[in-house]
Image 1: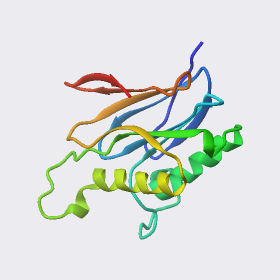
Image 2: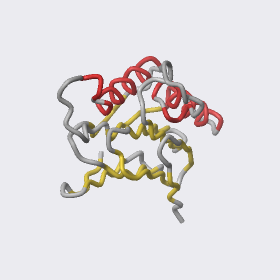
Image 3: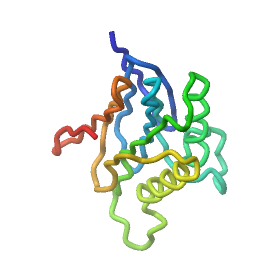
Image 4: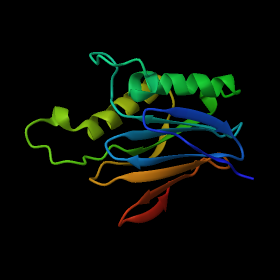
Length: 160
């Protein structure tokens, strides 16, 4: 039987086949999903902000792309994964509110850019993403085959 494990905001988790991971309500946050196709191990981190530096309350590494993604990879490696077998998928990073004055305030876009940069530095290819827009997403990530199901209100469900 498949157990679907919830990943909260600023949280991460890893699991093996046959289980799945889910996170609810990705707005400007980004769900970074990593799949080890050889061992059928998956990991998900629900990042809220791009970088931990310059943030006073940065004690939770899962909150940030620059600390959450490396920690997620470390946890997957502790289950037997190797970076060479990992691929990534991204979802979220929406611009939920109208931002007129500053690109700096577009947290969603900055989260996506930071996630891409960290994954590139760690040599983990991004094979699919559903990012941007101005709507929230709920995602379910399956260890069976690495598919990522994305549910949006008013836009239906798609799989990447």
